[in-house]
Image 1 (cartoon, rainbow, N blue to C red):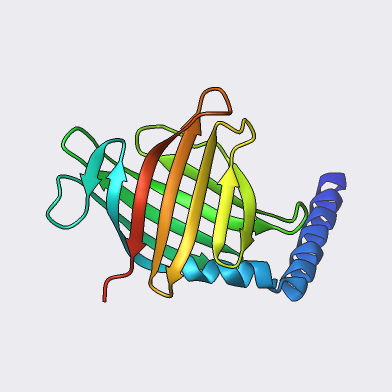
Image 2 (tube, rainbow, N blue to C red):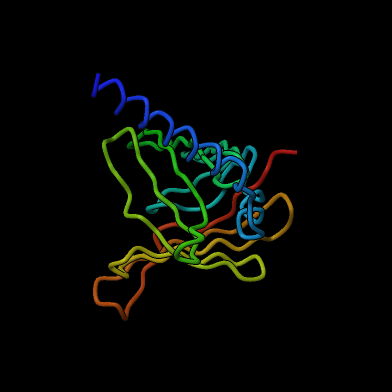
Amino acid sequence: MNRMRIGTMLAAVILCTATTHAQEAKPLPQHIALAFFAGEWTFTGTYAGVKYGPGEAGAIGESCESLGGFFIVCRYHVRSPTLAYAGVGVLGYSQRDSVYTFESYESTGTVGSPLRGTQREGVWRLAPADGKTRVTWTQASKTSYRIQIETTADGKTWSTVMEGRYDKPR
């Protein structure tokens, strides 16, 4: 009997909490800005010394969709002469911390370092807590953005690991 009451009370609490969250949940302007990344994307540029794009040795494609207006979930694939893998990335905005967030998981078993950062006038800057990498996305148009990923060992000298642009096919 006691277990039944506890189970019923727990179910009622969960139902009330879920109903309250569903009624309150409305995307903020910061969440709405994420919608830019929704859609199909192809990459042209260099990544780890390999050229990617039409007619090049490597290819990177990405398909991103909105998750309730609060997150963008991207599925991507990378193919080069020496490797091939797939992954999923989640881009969001933390209202609690007032920062944009990005996390990724890959078919190689790699879990990317969580990134946190800002967006101002179409320029997104994110980095992991250790400060050894920085990612910059710059919106070039409604259907294109530039990407630059840099790394450092000493915090002073930066090396570009990935540079190029993502475009939505026309």
